[in-house]
Image (tube, rainbow, N blue to C red; front, side, top):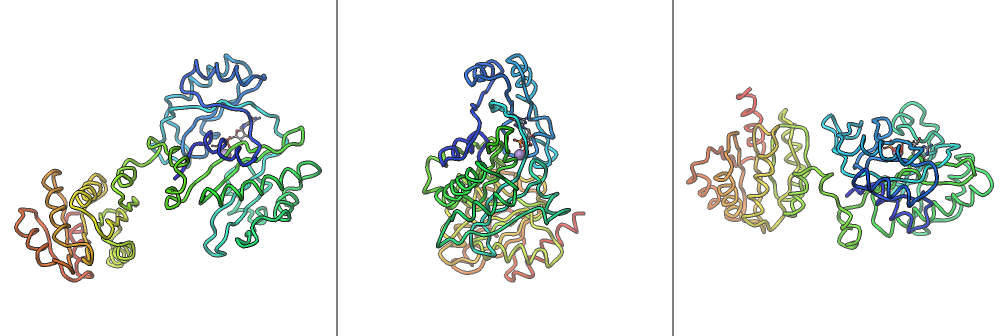
Length: 389
Ligand code: GDP
Ligand code: MN
C-alpha cells in the first residue's frame, strides 16, 4: 500500500526525520489559511497524488506570497496530472500540501528497500538526487552507493556515516545523517515497509538536512498489525479493480495481456500465467481466488476479470482440494448471468466435485469450452483469441 507525501512526512516525522512545516489543504481558501498559519515568506504548493515526477509535470509550485499560494493551488487542484509514473491517463489532484519553503544547497537521494537477494533491508544513497534515480542508475551507476543492514545487529552508527561520507557531508550534517538513517531504519522495520524513498533529501544553505519529498510503501501482508497505517489508505489513488479485489480478499494484479485468468492458489496461478505465455498468449491478470472461496467471491472475481476492457478470452483453472469445483461453477454461472459474457471462456476443473462442477457448467446455457488438460486448455484459450482476430 502506498500513502501520500503529506502522510509519509507525518509518519516519518514521528521517527525523528526532519521535515518542513506543512499541512494538507482541499481548496484555495484553505491553502491560504494554512500558509498563513505556517508563516514565513516562501511556501511550496505540492499536488498530492500517489506518483512521483510531479515537479516536472507542474505539480510543485513555489509561492512567495499568500496570493501566489492561492493562485498555485487553484492551478493544481482539480487538474489531471500526467507524470512519468501516472501513465498517460494521469491522476486527478484532489488535495495539495502546503509546506514552508527552504533554501536548498544540495539535493541528494536516499532510500531503503527490501532486498530479496541479501534477505535484508538495503540502503541506497546518491549525490545525484532530485532527478530520476532510474536515469542515474542506468547512465552513472557509480554515483549510487548501496549496502545492506544486517537484520540481526540492526542499525549501527557506521551505516549513517557511510551514507554521510558518500554524500560528502560535513560537520553537523554528518550527525544529522546518522540520526536520520537510524530513524528511517526503525520506521522501516517497525511499520513493515517495503520501500522508503527520500528524493530529494536536501542540505539547506544553513547546513541542515531535510526530507523534502517522501514516498513510503507498506507490505500489504503487514497491515493487519498497523490499523493506524491502514487508515491512511486512499482508494481514490488505487486501481478500482484492485480496491474491489481487496474488499473481497482476492489476490488480483492487473497485467497488460488479453487473457483473463481465474485460478485457485498463487503457485497454480503463476504456473497458469507461464503456460499461457508458453503457448504464445499474454495474461491480463494474476488472480488467486484462494483456497476456500465462496460463490460470492468467485462471482466477484469473475466480474473483475470481465471489467477489464483488454480481456479477449478467459481461462479458468481450478484444482479442487479444499475448494470445491461445484462452488466455482455456481459462482461463474451466477456472475455470467449478471454480466453479459461475450468472450470465449475455457475452463479446466479438476479435483473435488470436478464432475459436478462440469455438469453445472454444461447445464447452463453459457458457451464454455471444457478441457481436462492444462496445456490443452492454455493452447485452446490462446487459439480462441487468434480465431477472433
Ligand atoms: P516529485 O517531482 O514528485 O518528486 O516532487 P518533489 O517533492 O521531489 O519536488 C520536486 C522539486 O521541487 C524538488 O526536487 C525541489 O527542487 C523542488 N522543491 C520542493 N520543495 C522545495 C522548497 O522548499 N524549496 C525549493 N527551493 N525547492 C523545492
Ligand atoms: Mn521527489
